[in-house]
Image (cartoon, rainbow, N blue to C red):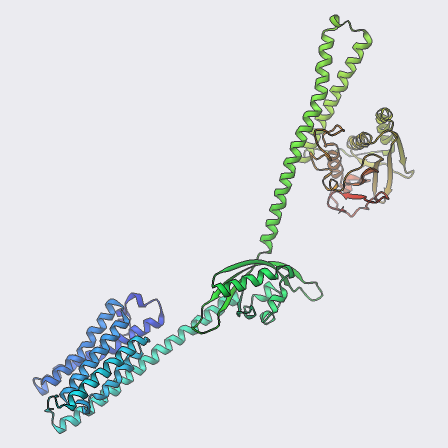
Length: 596
């Protein structure tokens, strides 16, 4: 029977359990009396014979609810079905009352059941319409009764007593059915509410996002258990102004604006802010980035408007965005540096190539120009020097490319570094003398043999000496120092030249970067020398440190292990060189050790 009744409910009413229960109760209370009447009709005919007008009307009324039940089953119009049922019940009661004594009839009690039945609809309009029907019917019967317009009842005394008993018993049974239907609907509503509460509580307890409910003034009235994961505190700690107090001071206006926008305007609002998260005992609290989405919470009429919000931890996303921005800026700087590098290389290539081409043509026209032996030797020397300059430039580019791609291999061997320093300074002595610069060596006496790539050390020294001499003015001094610090060696080249600006220090050693790189720069070079030095030092497991002051000079120190085979892949905190004793001094340590 339950399955049959469930199948009669209109599909539109199956979505909401409470509506489904109302429809099923309505259909059941209309089908049962009709089916009982239909089943009792053959017995009545067998014992009583042909029914009279009153009995026929009664049987007809008992069958009419079946039609109304099927109307609801086919259309799903619940309010209309209730109105039809109220009209049918009112009409049949009024008709029977008119034929059986008016307002003193045994069926008058059924008038009270009409609005009681309408209450099950849950619609004020249906209840009001049903009440109006009953009042109208009673008024008409009373009016006709006062003016003796009603037909005379032909029911005998015994029959009246029996009919009154049957009517009262049927009314009680029908009222009991209505009460059971009301209880069924009420229980269904409570179950739906309970299930919904349990479902939402289960979701709130297991969601990783923090759900909060706010009063109009922004005070938190509810916080989900995710408060412990997001803010590091139990949910009750966020009640009242607990959440606001944990918002970063700089972000509080944005937080309040989002809550007030959702509350005052009734629209959704979102905001990102920093929230203080409590750490383990003994640790300082940390701020995390959260995204809060607010929306107005609809309630009953007259209730104070509240706001529900969902807070999600977006710290990782913000970190990724910052990393992407930093990478984009770095890529932009790298592209800019590459552009400058190409311009510098073009300049560096053009000068020696022009010299080579020009002096070669002059040598080709030797007879016409009548060049003597000294002039030919001078031109050949210039051509050779220009070729060596080009070769050094190409070698620097190739070395930097190999270092960046990881294809530059070093060959460690034991050798005496002071002897290599002496050879390199001797090679650079002529260039220093031509520029009026003194070249000084200061090597400690207790230096042992080191293990490293001798060719790489020579290139480091020559590049550092070349830069120091190039950026020093006449009368300046370039000093090469060697100091031992435990298992580490400090190879320093200091000059008294133009120095380096503090803004350029952090990027020195980056490929293609050159401080004050412009077309009108007074010093030649591609900016690869220091990059090669940095790469070669790192291949040995060392690093470079740069200390400089504008107008007072620069010191570049290569901190290298005495034995690169043991220290190449070991990260240690190496001693930091002392800055020059002057105001405005800036220090940069490669490999992220120190930047000040």
